Image (cartoon, rainbow, N blue to C red):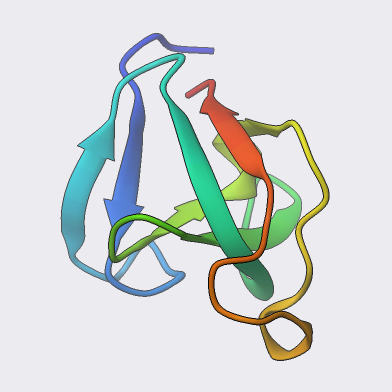
Length: 84
């Protein structure tokens, strides 16, 4: 585990552009999740609530319940602490 933080991507893929970076330990709200590119065995990516972009679940600690994107209304979701 690195304390460098985690990249926020335009789409749920490492081939997508980096649009932001969250520092290690930063808390952020999550809107919903999808299954997408597998990162170290984890296929879940979270859509952030308060800013555009996606983070891979592989490098975050989810502290709440987050619905799949097709199942949730805008603004619902949990929060996350970055661990990358």
